[in-house]
Image (tube, rainbow, N blue to C red; front, side, top):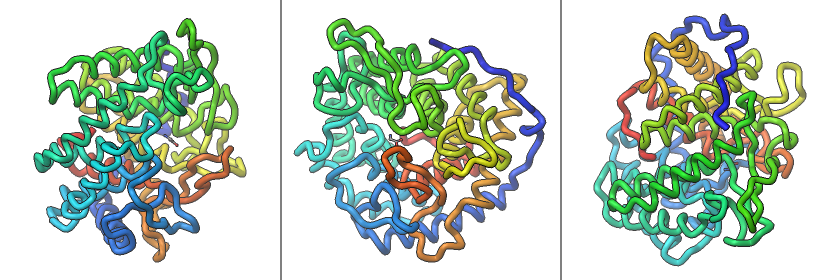
Length: 395
Ligand code: GLY
């Protein structure tokens, strides 16, 4: 369902707040130092999805869903500094993306957008790199093989058509921009249609009436009927996993950039209002929004950064007279200010990433209170958006 927008509780928490440009630029300068350290450690390879004691190990481009974030960080560093060394690293990585999708290495899942939008689509958009474009189009084609009918959604995990894996997850809202883009560059509408149907199916099942979200949703394999919402990385099935909620904030705005959908804007306003209503005092969420001040639980700073990217995108499309315009503007400033002041790695010399206190998967015991490469990416994207509101999306 398209939820109604919950009123902002305690709107004074989102009263006027200035985040000076110099502070954002200083944060970016600190980030570049960490990106340089990452390049020293990983060369043309990649950081693992999550750190151990705030140090990312180096991995090949053969598994997981995180490598695109590192390439994306390098693209931001390149655009912001003009220094070709960052571009040269990503260009050197492109053959590994081509090999991965051509030989279908570690791609039996839906995360083609996370992997290929920020690396290869960006390489195409920024440099006209034809190899990258071809790899991204192959990834889009591969993603279409996971489209399930009946049900009209992209199957997240497991072997395609396995009835026990007949579910979508809210995270996939950030994989479908790859499909919209594929339609744009090929003229073949099938990608766009699948993305749009998947978007609508996701919204219809994942958004609860109070604008919180389910992480995953199962469908009946025979009939395609929605069956039940279940969490995978959240605290419990009916809770709002912080990052899932953040995917439910930025995801609709990414669809909005391709589809000009009022429904997507309404979903964004609803999910982000819920998010803001559940932030603790320092504006940075715990790993599940059911926890608040005083909870002995880790944060997930990545959720804060993702939500800021969604709000910054939304502000470009909102009427300044909308009362939520100033709420979201000040929310971004307050959240980013808190991340910059309290959660970056600048005082941790060995840290080869950007943002501390992220949580990958608490129930599974993975990457808890560590750096996670996606949070680093979205922190960098949010900083880039703040210094350049006209930044053209890689998505
Ligand atoms: N897409 C997986 C995650 O957010 O952890």
